[in-house]
Structure formats: C-alpha cells, structure tokens
Image (cartoon, rainbow, N blue to C red; front, side, top):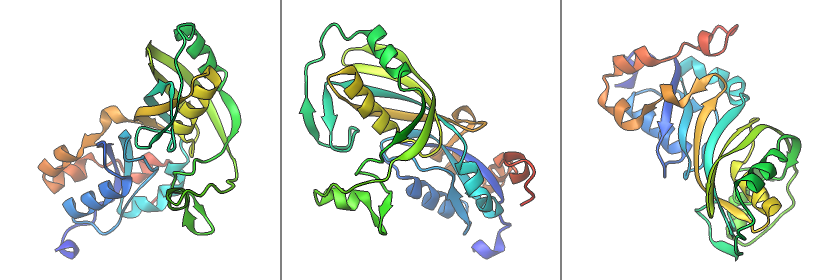
Length: 242
C-alpha cells in the first residue's frame, strides 16, 4: 500500500519516449513508484522526446521555479510543407518547392536572425486556455481565435545539418517557447514554409538529458534504487528548504 512506503522527495530526470504525453509519464511513475505526489516542470508535446523533469513529494512545491528555467532542444524541420499543427502530427495544408538556392548557409542565416527578444503567438493546437477552454479543442472545431502574444527570448538558434528538405537545428530558449512555432516561422522566413518533424529536449536549466532515465529502466529498478537517483530539492533549487 502507498501509505506504508516511505515518501519519495526530490527531482527525477526522465527521458520521455515519443507518443507519451507529459501527464502519461507522471501517471506511469505515480503507479510505478507508489507515490501520490508527483508532477513535472515543463510539458513536452507527445511527438517530442527527451528531458522531462519529474517532481516527487515535497519537490512539487518547487514546480514554478524549476519550470522557469531556460530550455535547450534539438530538432528537425521539413521545408516545403506547412501543417495545421505546425508539426508532423497535423495535416499538411500548404506545399511549395524548395529551390536549390536555399542551401545550408541561407538557412543558418535565417535562424540566426530569429535570435533575441521577441513576441510569439501561441499556436491554436496547444493546451493554452482561452476562457477556460484549451485552444486545441477550439482548433479541432475549425475555430481560430485571437491569442495574446507572449514574450520569449531565443538565445541561440543554429543549424546543425541540412539534407533537403530536412534541416536539423539546436535552439536555446526561454520557458514557454513553442519550438514548432519557431520552425513554422523559420520556414516562412526561408521561403517555402516548414513544419517540425522531430524534437528532443536536451537541457532544462542545469539538468541534462544525458543524466535521465528511460521509463523501462525505471520500471526495472527497485524503488530504493530510484530513490537513490533523486536529486534533493535543496540541490535542485539552492536556497529552498523543502
């Protein structure tokens, strides 16, 4: 029984698999680790993989602080196709040829121009709520409602490689940044449009996906071994005694 087990307190770094929502991961770990108090510090779309910062026990009280950390992602955008969700989970709504003149140098330059402070409009297919209703529910009805742009900062947006029509990139950005919207906007800036086909979160603040565990590995570990992997809250959030 849960009440007969010692409470787990701390931060667990998880490598989220593709196809899982962040809520799915939290629910799975709550069951695996037999704990009532669990949450996360930053949502990942189902299509995305990588670092999900899981908070257990008293660490959930530090969720707002940990959620505010800057993030790093690696992804792939596909030029010449625009989707209604801005990623590969949506339907293609526009296509355009990718001219040979669009090379790695041109793409890299376009990404660099998107660095810095800016305002970003949340996509319709998102969990952001308008008058209590998630935008994606309105989008599924074909509605497109006004959204308040949010202030974001893109510290780095660099091209890693280009093999037409796919451009691999790395981006460092502030919390709340929609990377699929960055890919969509980059495609517009480059010319033929684009959508996100792969995304992996590699860092959140000082946390690195290299230190994260997969769900299968966690499921195979004794609960005590998982407890030993937890990052104490005082270490994850210096100055906070939780």
